[in-house]
Each structure stands twice: as structure tokens, then as C-alpha cells.
Length: 367
Image (cartoon, rainbow, N blue to C red; front, side):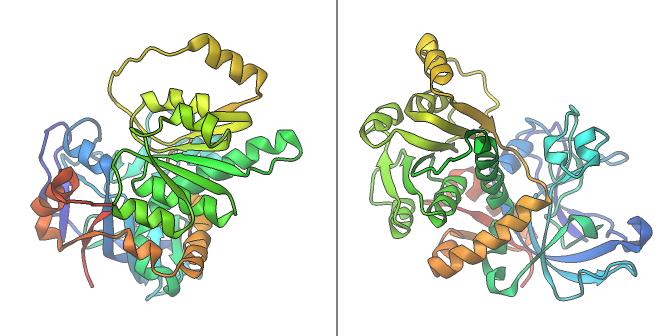
């Protein structure tokens, strides 16, 4: 079958490959599910894997099929699968459990192991292929009402996990009712975070670097969020003028803004970090004041990465809620489709900045 693969360790090696089709019988206990892939989103992770920054092939192979943002339709199920049937729309989770305590109890996203097994990222083939097979436990059904935006579910889970954990942490306060939130970054994750916070009735200020008019700014204003350009008002200053913020969700991909976000956070506030920054950037910070404010203000900073099944299920609910509250809004995020696995060059050209005003670039693998 056709798939898009890279040679781990070799920069810019993404190519169309002919790989063996997966077998339903490879999943033990009759719990296999074969899925026909319809759409796969691509993001900075796929770009960095193609740049050979990280990623490893499965044992026995010298290539890695990439793609972790899946959406497809069940084609066949094993004899022990009763919760799914052919024709169902589905998304697969990404990380597979290791051997730590957290893996064993069903939270592989919280593993203490140093090596992760993630489909399309490390040691497991991904979803940029005509089909895949996986265990039913890792397949999440998507209602037909949100199938058109189902490819957004995986990035949505990063948001769901971060916000859910902010509320979980704040149970320590007995009562925590956030009224104002800031989202740093107006890309796909930032837009989805803004939506989820607005669905919870929170006043949202989202920071971006591009002056209006932009599609991103227009989308934010459609859901009642405020769009602020960081060159006009720095994040730290916004905390004084528009905040302080009870919750800050950082999704800019630019690590120095984390320290500005710390200054914008209100007392008893939570700063959620979602950016994965692999460089060695250095900045000078007001360390004493930041430390003092966090200690005296009972502030918290927490990271969110990957997601377990519960956050995929929460994401399905919020996709449906978002479609109901703001009809058509989510679909507008799907700005740049690329037709067919054969268009691997076009896919990466758009992902690497060749698509003007791109929010979500994705491959239309099949109809």
C-alpha cells in the first residue's frame, strides 16, 4: 500500500513509499480494527521529523511512516470488537503504553519512561497511509455530525488535557472560577484553546504576532475573543492592562514568551505550557521577582503533551459543542488540503511555509 515515510536521521527524506499492508491478525485477542484513512493533518512535529531532529523507525524497518493526526473510517473489525463496526468514523490515539506505573493504569501520556512509542513519531508507524490497523482500545469513535472536522481531534486533545489539568490542580483551592484567560499564539492550538475556553464562558485574550486583518484574528473575534498583536502590547504588559489572567495557555512555540506569561498570571493562576521548543535560546529574566510572585501568589505552571483516551473523548464533545455554538467555525480552520499521498512534495512545501495564511495543512488521503 502507499504511504508517506521518512528515513530517520536523514534530513528532508519524506517520500512516497510502497509498504506492506497491515494485518488485522497482528492484534492479539481478536481486538484488531482496520481503518481506511481519509484525512491526516500535519504540523511542526512532522516537519521536525523530516528535518531529522528526532524520530526512530520501528524495530526491523529502516523507514518510519509519519503522520499522527488521523481521521478515517472503520473497514473491518476483529471478532472480539463489539464497540466499533464498519462505516464508523474514528480517530486513533498516538502514544502506546510502556511499562511504567502510569502506562499500566492507562495514562501513557504521563509515563516516566524516557523512550516513547508514538505512532508516526517514534518507533511506531503512523497514519499517512492508505490504511492502518490498531487495537480497539486506541480507536475513538467520531460522530457523523463532526466528521467534517474530525481531523482536528488530535490537536484538540492537547488543549483538552491542558485545561482539564488546570482545573484538576486548582481543586486545591476548594473554589476556582476563572474569569479571564490569555492564549499565547494564534495558530491551530491557540485557536482551539481559545474556542474551548470560550465554550466554558471565560473571557479570552489571544496574542499573535501578525497585525490585523488576518483570518486568525477574524476567527477569534467571531467567538467573542479579543485579538492582541504582541508588537502593540507585550504579554507581560497585558497582564496589567487586561488581566491579571486566571489561566494562561501558552502555544506560541517561542520560549521567551513563557517568562512574559509568568508575569501576566494572576494570583492563584495556572500557566499551561504546550509548546515543544528544541533549540538552545537564552534570555535574561527577572528571576527574583518571578520567583517571589509565584511563591506569594500560589501560582502554578504545568506542561501538557500528547493525550490519553479520556482527552480524545473530551475533544469529541467540544468539537460537537463548538459546531453547535459557532456553526462552520471549526471547518474554517482547515485552510490547506493537499490531495493524495502522491502529493508529498506539495504537502511539505505548504507545511514549510509555502502556504499563505495557513492554519491547518492536511492530506486528503481518500474521499
